[in-house]
Length: 381
Ligand code: NAD
Ligand code: MG
Image (tube, rainbow, N blue to C red):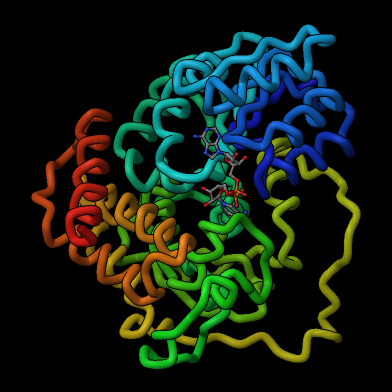
């Protein structure tokens, strides 16, 4: 029996993780945490019977306590609840499926407690990779990637010597606006941005895919996961999303992982690594695939990718500012308060306004986050 906890169980990755639990009776859910969806959380508790459950707001936690008072589940709230969940003695693996850098402290707490991390929450590595990776090494805790590209890279490195890697080839679908120029993006609506061609995901990452900020965050995520410099990570636009990423070695060989776009595969791979469990579903039919194509990313139009390389190059607290400014800007865009292209302006402005600190502590990371928020609020005041 493998005992897992899911941070962000009501979201896109969280609910797909629970589907995998349904299909694999040797997985047991010991803890769940979510933001505000009480009804879905109640259903999940009734089906999976966790020991501990966390809701972000105390008022929502209270409502859940009321709804589940016939059950022995313990219900907590807030950051304290998330930290307690991360260290729950009965849990072995924590799936970090929460969205945003709020995942930093629970992820660090889980590593401290020796939990294996199945990592979907890329914002945490982008902002605190310099703290998380060495801590995981010290605690001998595996960090198993759930992000499809990083899972593909991880799979393409199986049995290989890491020092023989020459480049990482990170594929990108290009998002819903691939091929468009800047002037065509000025009137993009929230609905347009939420129509991803290949993947169905949470709202924030779907917008990030449309701006290509997601790919930029993934470059930084790959840097930390695989110890490769950003200059050795090449982004390749591949609109069919069949090749999930590739690794080039010093002899010129390129290893890749292919499949239909379905997050359940990388989630399941992380949960059972190094095993590869069976999974139902459609298979790639190479005769039906008319073609697979590749393009260079257009970083003049999709400035998010260029800004992420810049932040990665500066390092220290700069990736935090990129990420925090993006989190705030995307939420303003989703609330229809700013236009699509203003997301880039706000990120760039916040980065220009920031004096980076090298090797920031968690407190300094949270300060840089707060500064980026203040900058955006002051520009909009
Ligand atoms: P989502 O918005 O669908 O789900 C987010 C989850 O986090 C929800 O359960 C929500 O309730 C929970 N949450 C948010 N704030 C919280 C808080 N303060 N306290 C407790 N829980 C909170 O997001 P998603 O698409 O599942 O993405 C989750 C993470 O995985 C993101 O970092 C994203 O970049 C990454 N990721 C997602 C996909 C995908 O296919 N969805 C693919 C690769 C990586
Ligand atoms: Mg991805």
